[in-house]
Length: 389
Ligand code: GLA
Image (cartoon, rainbow, N blue to C red; front, side, top):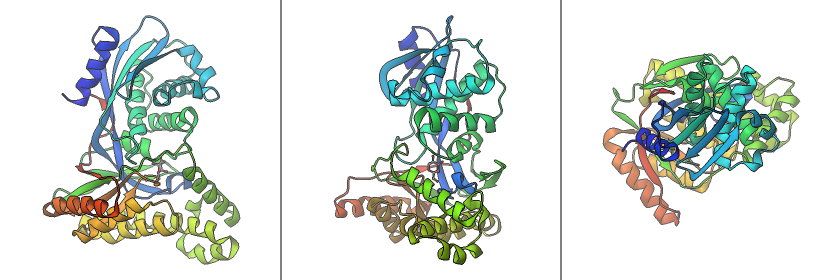
């Protein structure tokens, strides 16, 4: 049974009827460009072949009910009550439901509509949760697409990504950027989305992994993270402090040439945070250029430099992620780095097809030797973005 079937089955169990349709949105891997999105910078993510599906049916009242494979207990709210719940009283709702209900709330706020039909939604997902693969953006994208079509709102994909981000920031309370939602909305098979997070201009960049006989291996460390708490927000605050000291609107406005001056003006920790973001923006630009001129085999050093910068300057790696990267490289990967917000989650390795098994084995052995929980290793394929199933 596919995950789309799971959503339909769950819908039938909830309502005793068939859904009118089902919509889905993918998780994402970020190839490079970490913690640059909320600094107005550049990112290069791609949508993956793991998706969240939302089966939807209409109700004859103005209520929204959601159920999911995350939690068997349905949550039901009057559409008119969402404005009272978000953001201040969000804690009254089960955490998973805030992603879906938060999207409905953000759509209502954005459109100002108060005449919308009630809906039942059943959500099923095969995007690993807490692995740094944007399971949350996948829920937001699936629900946003389903409601946009059903309520005939005719919002475009970039606007739906912004709706997802509003839900994430305000309904869930995670102070994240726009990358994940844009990647989930705009994904294309065999390609990455090169995104300018200031203008929100996106360009589709061919990855050419298949032609080069390369695979993208994900090593999920099983170390769970949450961006609603702790380190993520602290890093964001350090970036804002750095930009303020340098007198720019965002770190995007600095280049590598500004770093000597930055070192003189700020404390050492803030400087290292700034240096990560400024050099990472440059690495995204270099990666796009390298993909175009030399192909994917030539981006390995950029991936490794990105990881080192996150480990040493931004300090968001964990021993499991470093071990995964080292093991992948020792088994012959072209390049490897942690992906996503950090503090756990997954590493990615770009690997020749005939080395993929060796990389998985090396990671598993290295984790066992270090006494870590066994990693979950699998390959992902750059895939299409959100839409109707
Ligand atoms: C998380 C956030 C994104 C981005 C990354 C780090 O995935 O949701 O907005 O900031 O971390 O690059």
